[in-house]
Amino acid sequence: MSDSAARDRDAAETESALSHPPVAPDASAAYGNHPDQVIDFYAPRDGRTGAPVVVVVHGGAWRAPYDRQHMSPFADFLARRGFAVASVEYRCGSEVPQQRGSGPVAGRWPETFDDVAAAMDALPALLARELPQADARRIVVTGHSAGGQLALWAAARHVLPEDSPWRLPAPPPLRGVVALAPIADFTTAVELNVCSGAVGQFLGREEDFEARAPYADPAVLLPTGIATTVVQGTTDIDVPQAVSEAFVDAAAKAGETVGLTLLPDVGHYPLIDPVSDACAVVAEELAQLAW
Image (cartoon, rainbow, N blue to C red; front, side, top):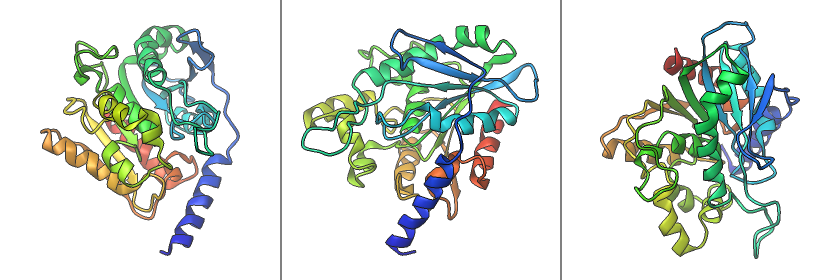
């Protein structure tokens, strides 16, 4: 496929995934005082009790123009599959353009990680209050793109450096992680200029990057001991297959097996597009860990 054809295909897939109207949650709850510190809850549409929980973390290169709204049709899709869903919002980068650049900054350090950690820590109590029919003992985390990085990070907090404020003393009580085209290996992502340099913006200047990467890069936070699967489209030009493969290879070198489900002729956004076959595959991967 030519570069222009690949771009046209990516644009069509993106338009399809983002064309669905937002789906209002059944409940929302704050996990902090900032307006972005909120979780939306979607009850299983079949009314079942004891439903496993899928925590959804949105992507968007950790940049402010993207929030959980574009993931709400995906959250509703999972709720229609019988899951209880918790869709996490968090502080992304400022909408103010980056210095010497034209786009918004990717992520906030340390606020983005502060929020994901706080949301996960608050989740059991919020589930008991907002979705009492859910089974908080069966939680799977999923995230798309930059959200995939955060999902993997949320499952790796017990292997963070000992001086990390986000470190947990024991593995989090998760059934597993399904990371969707995640920015899961920062070195490879930087080499490929993924999302127009988003990783470099997120971690900061070169000296900051080297100091912060051990606290943020999923590829160095291994092994976690938590079941992990990566779902990746082979024609993804936003977060290429090589990034996921580098993470899976890093896990293997650390003595851990990470599943890699490659979807032929699938790009970046079909993974969260409710009308795509790829989205159905994602639901199946989640079900294998949750049930």
